[in-house]
Length: 141
Image 1: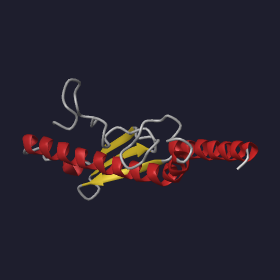
Image 2 (image 1 turned 90 degrees about the horizontal axis):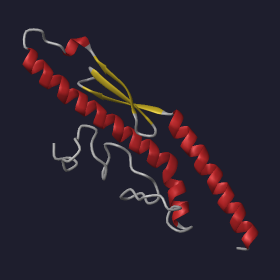
Image 3 (image 1 turned 90 degrees about the vertical axis):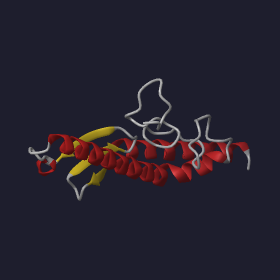
């Protein structure tokens, strides 16, 4: 490949990357738990943008059990939404990351295990879960 072709290929890849990033910024995915009683919506960049809890989850006769159930359902829905966002990110950016890998490892972006060259997202491997507090080991509860 001569230098002109290399520069043209790099520009094309940069344009594709920018388009994929725009698509991710505009996309939203939903995770659910409890048969849809709790729904979490996450954008393609991994930001939690909405959380809906059905009133049917609430048992006024047993508030302690209700609180525990709601917490479990919220965690499950958020994890489901983050998984869907990760799948979407892989779908949109994965082919580009593979192409960037041939140009020197992803243009200096940090690696996601199994997906070199792309930054990690909250709630995904290698990054603390949203519920983790500073000073605790990620995922330690």
